[in-house]
Length: 444
Image 1 (cartoon, one colour):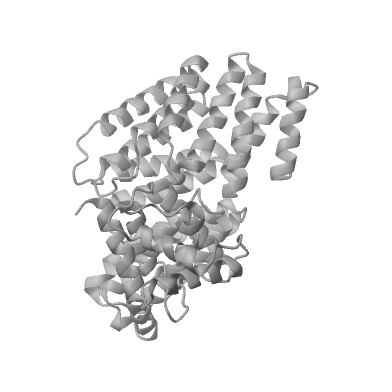
Image 2 (cartoon, one colour):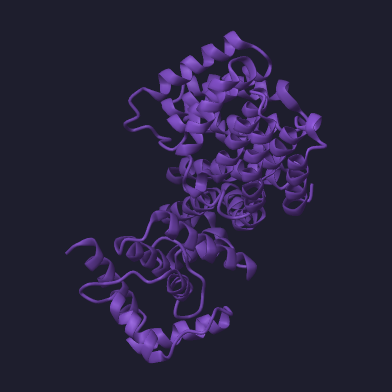
């Protein structure tokens, strides 16, 4: 059976699992279109023909309108509860779309749209858990000694799901989804849970609190961010995997770099990250730590130190990453961005521009939207250094919408700093256009 036939079979199986006829699905989609205030669908007979075509021997792919309606249909259980986690009909539906030929970008977008609707309705973490995990979680919270491996795996999946939506959903919505997971980890750690599960729970707690620290910073709550990073650091210190400690220090250093604490405190955190990464088992985390160390040195005007750290990052990125415990921690595209920053501050702005361009070309996934906006802002600064201020302003226009979509603080801060460098041209019409765009979208 080829992929398209398998996708059609999965859609049919989902319908049968719900006990729905072709006409039943058609009626459900028509009702959903009305409930969601979408344009009215054709008659039941017309929609039924479409449903049959998606399940046929030569299936067609539902168009975007039907894809979204089907996503809302399968996002809820027959009892009406939102269920988007592993094992849910919703996950099975997205997999079927992929088999039918839909892109990963589109299925990611559909997931984000449904999650956005869930937070609109006050839904949260439970929507990301299967019914079985929900039941196990309730039992564990009543008695942490009854915590099971599947419950902790479910919590880990929530943290990973929220992290995957950075760049797709506004930061404040991600906070709503993540906060219950952070509190659940705290309550279970106070339990205590059975000894064989304690280490895994600590790992999940580190990931949850570090991500919460970043989200707090992005939503301009610096006090909460510092407290959450301190909590993540303490918990990571209980683990034998020092690369996890390095990850917390790096995340904290990145937000510190843009806070009032500035460069000295960021350097202290980066140095701690490098020391932890050197004894860790992840070359990719080590590469990221050295790259961040290079950026901090470059911003301080320390060219030799920046070049040395970049050399170490390049060495680690070229190493064998088979079995790396953090396979998504860093990539050549990310490294090019750091190389560009170093060229921007202590090197050649033309070389910086080229590296930023290549980096942006690789950062195409929804998860990379925040990083792409940051890289493009730095690219604009390189154009400014090259004496092309109008071209720099045109690049900054591209970053404004991305900063607004994610609600991220770091892209917005980078934009404002770049705009300050355009002050000598403040009377130019193209600077006024950029200011209007910033005011309309960011209110600043």
